[in-house]
Length: 266
Image 1 (tube, rainbow, N blue to C red):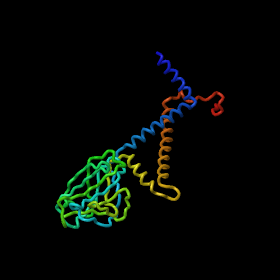
Image 2: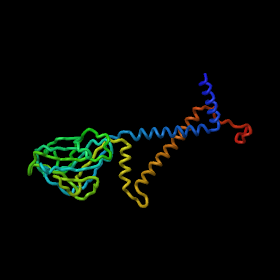
Image 3: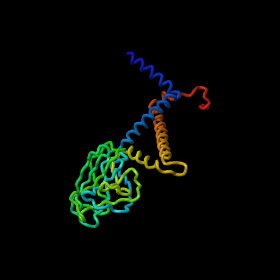
């Protein structure tokens, strides 16, 4: 019984304020904010499928044959969660090389091998990217990994190789062969099972290094995000206010005063 009384009082107060338009505007602002927050959360987590990020694109030299004692290691830092693919540009010297080759993905912190995949040297299409897919590494963003290529049965003229760039354009990684540091880095791409939030975050990390006149890329990116939130908030506010007013019905609309000059009856 007490709850019904409270409900009636609250309903009467809201109806009285609605006649003045105050409650409608306040409720519209609150509902708009909640709707925008919920929509942004859903959009941020929306899956977009596989997104590939290339580290380097210009091949400048071919490393030595991958044989016992000359295994190749390339470190890299994942820029998003759910790392699930690594593509490496391999070389076969124009020959059909029928040996086993192993791709290993190792955790840079613990030294534990996370992935080990065997493939045949004859399957290498010289100069193109060879894909290595594996189960998603859920929390990969910011972690250091080691890409390893090894071929225990290879020998002279019976081994594959990989392409690299002699200029160190990827300072996050180090390329070594047989324990010896090589110039530059391998040509490789990283694939992530990403969401919209991951793509936005990767885009933000990329543009943060861009400078256009007095404005850096990070400031421009933040300005675009603010405009998105502002426009979405205003649109939802107008729509919510319109729906709310229509739901109140004509009995809650502001009635004209008897002496209101805006209404004349001739």
